[in-house]
Length: 90
Image (tube, rainbow, N blue to C red; front, side):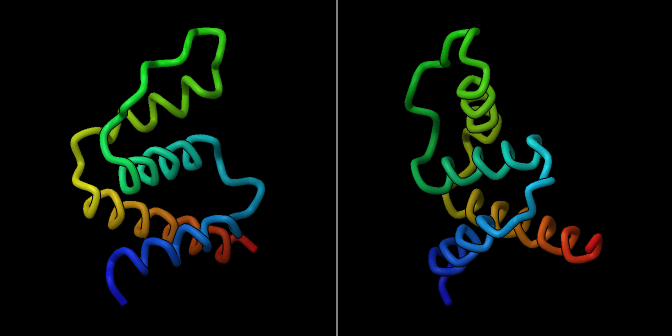
């Protein structure tokens, strides 16, 4: 299985993460996913009253400069970690 296929597989598995996954972890995954699929941030930062979109934009900006392959690997690692934590706590 190639990196892209493994990434897509873990993107599907990420949808099964428990409801109690922290927003911080969700934002990390969001930023890595966007970096892996699109690359560097290509939009302007949302206004200060749009807190949710601004947090998502900041999470993406935080991983700017990572190669798409590196972002895919980091995303896979993070999903594995969160799934392991979820299964350990259940």
